[in-house]
Image (tube, rainbow, N blue to C red; front, side, top):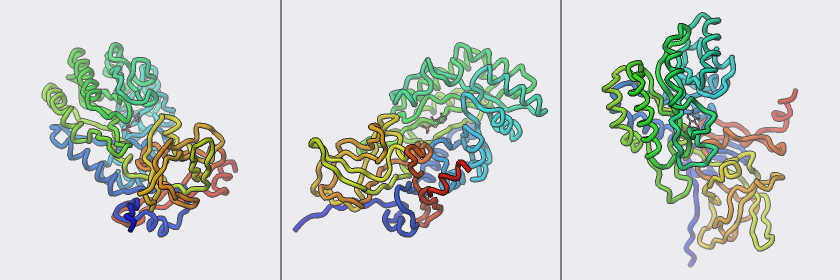
Length: 417
Ligand SMILES: Cc1ncc(COP(=O)(O)O)c(C=O)c1O
């Protein structure tokens, strides 16, 4: 008798191949469990419910802007963090009632849209403040602004996603920040609300979050700006477990870690609301990328499994040395061997997973699934090598809630018509 260990992926309580069959889409395809994303969004709202002021959880659209998915998240949070005009449009169409606008080089159109809609602008520099003032004056409006400060914290994450180190392109360091805040307070064209910071992404320890809040708190107290504070935005950045045995802090842990400082700050300045901008920790675990084995090759003592999507669909391994767990859907994991999984692109960086245990009998046509692909995967997809953008299926309460087909040649070619 053989004991079989069959790896079955479930999405919103349904088997993956069943979902794909009903959706009628081919591969590669991102599949999302909207229930899980909604659950994570709720966890944030619940975790910070002790905060004495209002709490605004602004879902960071950059993590995943798939409108079919975003509408479920925004039905909970009602607020989004956006970095472009199109993110603004998608967020508003998906039900956002409130936006915070980020970016180190916002366009005039983005600033104008923010000003006309009274969305809060996290201003990145004195130079940007001057542009905001000019546009607000021209429009006859007062822009609602906060300053993005850089608390100069170096979290233990990939350098590309550590956004508040000393040499960062984002924000104004705390030595120079008072001058910009005072200019905001004195300006007749803007309304100063407070400060924003975001120290990075995929942060799996609480210490950097505590350190950042403490140094911003010290800054606010020492400068007396605490008295003007109506808005404190602590950004996003909480990590997700990419490896099966990885433990990461959850929203309730973050809330607990920040509780004393936030409470004290609020008692010094009772008028401010708390803003957060989580992205990855809401959608990261809620998505998978489903690919199909195209070919298997043995070369130089190494086994290669080539699938039908590469770094065009999953850039994180090449860009951040990131790890995604890989599962052969329906695969028999009793007998396994090591193999590397790569895409079809003409690029040596197009290796998605190195030296993983896969079933010995994996074969052409099998589904190879990359887990924890809900954040910064679909939103970073490209057409490199003229590869199609993968399809996307959203499942909510076990029902298909949104389908995008794998990009067709006509849809791709029409970009230049
Ligand atoms: C300003 C800002 N806010 C929020 C986020 C979302 O971060 P995360 O997805 O790690 O929560 C980012 C992403 O790096 C960001 O740059």
